[in-house]
Image 1 (cartoon, rainbow, N blue to C red):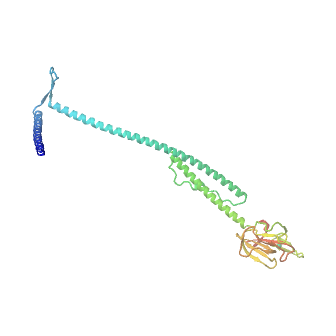
Image 2: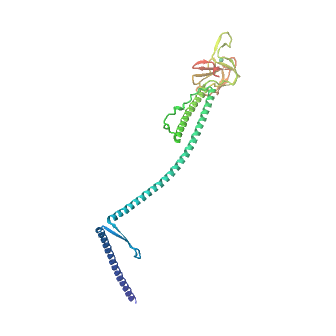
Image 3: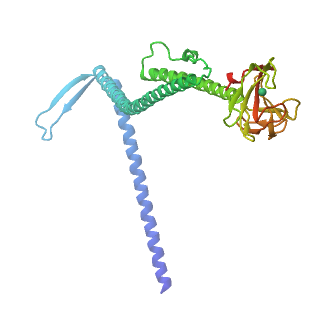
Length: 349
Ligand SMILES: [Zn+2]
């Protein structure tokens, strides 16, 4: 049963194979015939083209009633073909060029839009910078006003003032080209001006600060502090009568300030304690050496509060009023020496 079935299958396969082979052979033959026919027609056309100088075109409607025909010279046909070819070339080139320009135009439009956007953003930035520059200029002007006020106050208190810095000192370096009237050029010029003014103000303020510092130092070392708590001047600097009787005049090297016994004695100026101890005549003395060639001396004290070598600040307690040494009652003998020479203490206080 199975064998019979297999036989049938084999038979079917064989028949199918034979059919396919015959079909393939027919197709091959057909293709060959077609190819030969094409070659033949091409050869005929070629030959016809070369051997004829004129060609006839026929126009035959479907019912065959009318026949229109025209004779054309081969050269004319050649011209026509060339013309059509040339026309096609021109048309395609034109289309290409137009397409190219269209794309370019589109790109340019896009670029222009981008450029406009960028320019608008830049203009906004410039406007903001402009506002800032104006604000900075106002602030600098205010700083200049403040500086003038500081100068006025300093002048009132007798401080030696440094000269104002000339803004032109900082100008003239670089700068935009002449005639650059663009907003950017104007801004650049403005910014440079602000920079110059700011530099000048910085220099001025630094000079003022150093003037104030040196003035403060001068005041610190100038013996202008009254050396006791109150008291009364009983003897002035210079010539006076001898307190121990007699009619001769003795020169007085300082001033005497009468005060109660134990009243505090203050340093008239800051400086280093040069001497502190008992000395003949004046007894219980203190000598303070200030800067700028100044020295102050305090004598007849009941006790001393600082030792030699110590630095004392102006107004600091250095001892107490007494009556030690040659003295007629509790008082402070106070001297100021400038470069070693006795001067009138009242010219400092
Ligand atoms: Zn005296």
